[in-house]
Length: 352
Image (cartoon, rainbow, N blue to C red; front, side, top):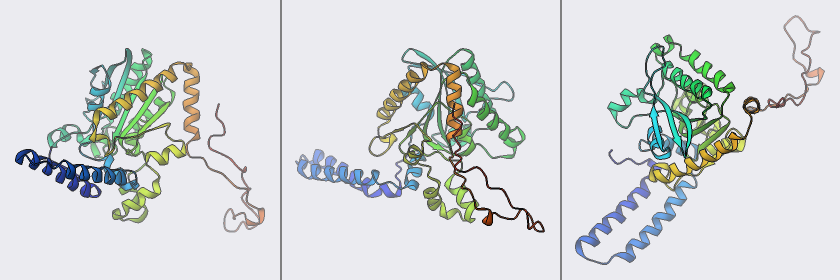
């Protein structure tokens, strides 16, 4: 793959290039430039730290979309000891944008599913640029129901800009496939660990993103809509995507603060693609820890906790309105007012 760097990384990339050129010149000419190289390396470390410790939400989104960021299959290869891929939804066909199968994780059999992007044009076409069709979601659900039957825990990897929005996908029931996955995952009688590794866009991510433990990489995002889509809907102006990214609160730190995710995994300095194995080891340890914690919870209680978790998302408060300020029900009914609702109602108040 050709070299690729984001705009905000370019000063660092240029400095790293100077360091490499000096090292090559020193070796070729036999001149000791170790002091100069050491000074530049220190500057590079300081610049790298300054850049990646002060990222904006939009910059994190750009990192989540980085073409060198590890894909689901690459993570599976690095994290699991063995993996057998399974194919097809038993209704229409096999969707390359979603992969899944049975894996071994430290002696524990698990079912693994995840969205898969391509590395080049040919693979992206085969994978539909990582945007699943309904048969992909049906394949994922088939494997999850199989896991439930054989009492295997599920590990789901999320990295998707969104479900495929084409006419043929709608004709084959895209909305229904996503909705069914949401319902079925909410009540599956086995533990589910979700790892958001890159993009987590719209229903395409939600359809495999319901779980007992949600783990999210530091530079990933998880949102009901992309910043571009949000800007287009709110302001009819896609150029305001950066503003939308700020408003949506879709980054890992934001979602951790809101209680949407359970764990935020720090990435190697420079992001996950700079040290894939280190990132994979962190994910493996986090998944094993989560599965160990969930294994001690009875299945019935596990499902109850998952339901309560979903109910807690999106808290709101209804304040009691004085009768004199209550709005009219309809024109011509001046004496009728809307009765004030129950005060201080929270979305998660019925947790079992």
